[in-house]
Length: 472
Image 1 (cartoon, rainbow, N blue to C red):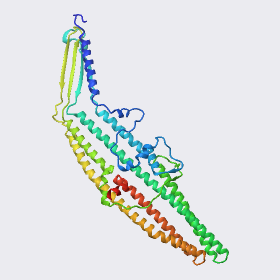
Image 2 (spheres, one colour; image 1 turned 90 degrees about the vertical axis):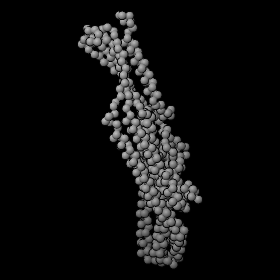
Image 3 (cartoon, one colour; image 1 turned 135 degrees about the vertical axis):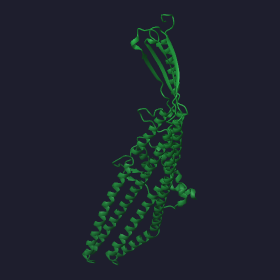
Image 4 (cartoon, rainbow, N blue to C red; image 1 turned 120 degrees about the vertical axis):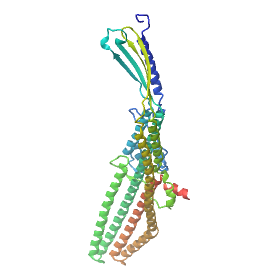
């Protein structure tokens, strides 16, 4: 109690301020409640990604393998399948890990966007040098609580813009996953091709060795000139050089594949798979209708929505916010007090956020133009990849059905005739070179076909066999 029997008004005043502060804090905490599954996104231990846009069919093609693979699974030491390589890349690719962190960054920004402004408490002393005086001229203490109240739906619009930005981060992550899977598939095909080429060169070395042995025997028997034996040895040395080159190419291809999951030293022994035969192709028109599934294009729907949300947010900033003040003053000597309350609002005479609104509108126009450019770019890339695919398809078909059977038959006939003395050694070398070149060309055509098919799948966001089935 004070000297005049009145309660201590400063104590009551502080109690009122404390209650008002607690109420404001409770309201502020209700501004945004993060989803339960993302509540750990800001903890020291990384949380799993809980948000991502709809996956493309190309991603779902490998999703089962990725989900069924333990998080700590190491690279196999024996045979490596394409699914295993894709799962390893999705789990351990360092670039993907960086993109996943960007999604968590945007989750945190959504959380921040939903928070209310903090209240402000101020304490001010007046006339402190006149502590002996009574009344208004004496010393006094003023305590004031201020709260900024946002109008125009700013918080809701801010959250919406942050959520769309988070969706864009998810699309960027999706695009990177598609690119990584494409890189894995192409690197895996390169390893398969290098393995087959090495086997082909080893077969050629064996043939050259057999021919050299036959020539040596015929020279010893005096049936042909020793010059022919020299030629056979030169041919054998030449294919040994090709063998060394094929081994180095395989080593390089293996390292490039291992790099997709962040490894510098491949542990697998060989890639397990078949190059396979070429299949019939859907038309370019059918594939063009599917490019909307490409995440490079699908993301632009979210991009446009985000730009529109920013326009609404910037327009809401033109609506002035109000600041509510509540407090009081106590005079030190006589215990008098005065309660004060007020409201302040800025006068939007000059700055009505015109520049930022205009900037957001131009950003929307820019995004619309960029979407059209992306559509043209993807359609052009699809046409180029399809032409490469069709050319490789035609080349592989002709080589398999016409050239390879003829080259094999000619080599078998010449080789048999050489043993019987009907053909010269040059004829054997020529037939052998023709067969090897034909097999090498067929392998190169198969490699080009599957590499181009993988690129087409990336552009349409769907496996070719699925697109082919839709066209039938």
